[in-house]
Length: 436
Image (cartoon, rainbow, N blue to C red; front, side, top):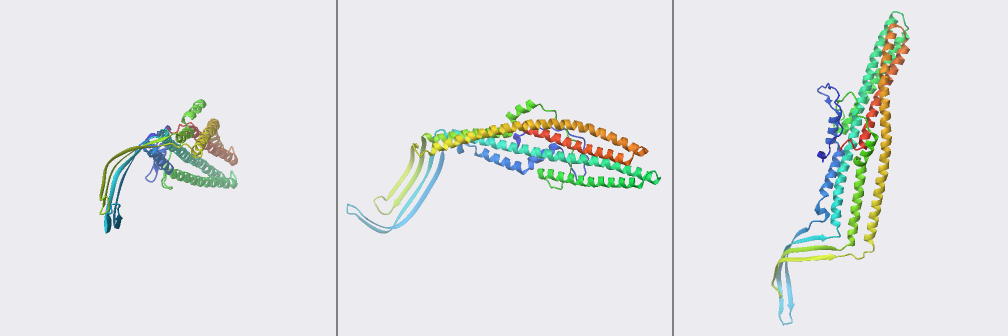
């Protein structure tokens, strides 16, 4: 089954990773590949799909004959007393009798109201549903892996921003200390600089914990030890822009949930055909090849032996059984009606989901562009504020405000990159573009 699915997701490889003996280098492609190989939900779905494939046979559809072999034997020792009209009298004890029989019995249903053909088509659709269910599980796992992977990237970016801010705070502390040493500024500036530096270091520790937790979450999806370390990319690449009409058209032909619901409708139709087959007669062909032998030490028949072929047929037709068959067909028709309504409801929900997801994708990308610009502006403002503080042209409060502004811009930008990637992934899942 694994060979039936191919990845549409093509991600850019970002840079060269520096690794050591304890750290595993991992790209998003490698993470997805590991998940498809190891994840328990996918393995279970594949096994269920294989079960549906195994059930899709001519025999299960009722198209093939049934052949049984039979053998029996018996031995008896009895006291026998017989009186015949001819005057013959048999009165013996310890009379032995032996009976053996063996044979091959063939039964073949050649007509059952076309039920076997409907059953075969139903089994084929159930196999297709098993494959679709596996695909749905794969799509869900890929979405989870992408989310977990780029959550790690986001945490790394936040850590990088904190380290930059810590470097600025350390420089600010050095400048404040020098100014205090020469009597230019009060000790309060030095103390405040230390407080702010310690606060940033505390935030860095918490951020490292979030990073470790994010890696553990990804390891769980990949069925790896939770404490296994890994290196991931430093950036979150984005695909090209989507066109709404293309996505809308793709949903109707590629969305796995809708395709699954369509298959359910087809199964319901074939079940109705199976139910209607009870309105028609049923014809079976029978054949057997048997050998039987019976030996008796008393009685008229001392030996009876048969060997040969018997051919025949049986026909049956249920004319009336209390409306059970007709009621069953009516219920199956209601089931088909419900399956159709469920499909239409799912279609409207999927289309609504596309409208919302596409709008979110557009907004997230617009926000991403703004935050990219904001980070550049905040960084330039921080550099100016640091130079002014170094020259004594501004206060530590102004520098702290610039630092906070830069830290906020990094946080917003990391969130914007992550949100845009998740929006992109959701659109691909809706349109059936993650796996095909």
